[in-house]
Length: 254
Image (cartoon, rainbow, N blue to C red; front, top):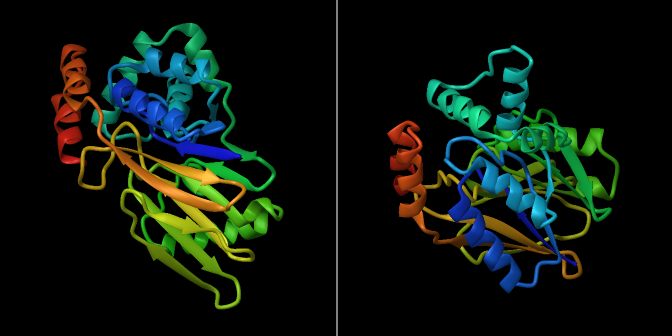
């Protein structure tokens, strides 16, 4: 069984299409999204409808939770640019797509052997940028979730790909930087956490759409970085009246 795991689509239809096309080419059996289907970019309805049509197993991210906050009269904990994009998203989303987003769970277990979270196993809105923060996440993964599912998880939220491993014998977290095509073997007994980056607003310094391919038989995880129609996405952002910085940052990978 091969799982394609991606995250942080953020209403970038061109990035999502590139990822789904590559997933089909690679023969992925199941599609999985770690949240933030909407926000920032100009195609929230098209992206929601595409993941629903493709049967993608999705969880909520902080932008979906931000939508719920707005619906229930609370102010989301977001910066002004993200708030402006969220207000746009709320205005244009169909009620059916909105209700579907708000019905998603905050985390999920798949295949009987791995979990997906948006931020951290301990807090869906927590960012994991380094081994120190990853150590707290592994503590929650190990103590709060049952084996064997707590040996492996996938996250997003930071928009930057990363690979973390925890050796229970040495009580040490190791971080490895990742590039396109990097392949990691999941070894028995160790705990792993892979950040799949973002297929809609990558922040690792390059304009890319990223995802991971998990081979459940070989127990390997492969990272993929893809080009997509960046200009088309940027033009839609400007035409929608969203903050121009959202188009500019896509080119910078920030």
